[in-house]
Amino acid sequence: MKKFILHLLVNILALYAAAYLVAGINIIAITPTDTFLVLLLAAVIFALCNMVVKPIIKILCLPLTWLTLGAFILVLNGAILYLVGFVVPNYRVETFAAAFLGALLISIINFAAHFLLHD
View (cartoon, rainbow, N blue to C red):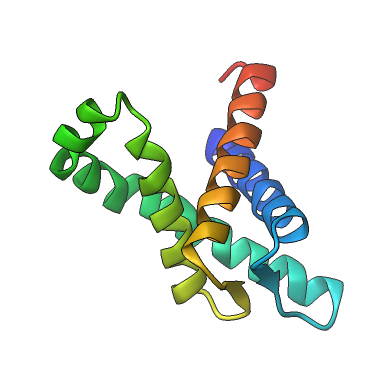
């Protein structure tokens, strides 16, 4: 449970960084509490999509992943972030290019957190 909460907090930070740094990803909230609740919901949906949807899509897209030497995984991450922007109210992902860049940033932050926290 502690590990899940830690990953959730890292995802909240990563989703906030993506909204702050990438043009086309926006959080629509009035107060800091609203912002946190939107990020919490987005992080939970993002984690659920990564646990349930992503493995199925990875298996279906395995030939493309092999053909692109793994680069297609970034496209899948962008698609999942775009899906999160579609599902979560007040977390907007305007274009797939913004989702791709946001997913790249989220992947870098998650990699750094994994390296620093030694799961």
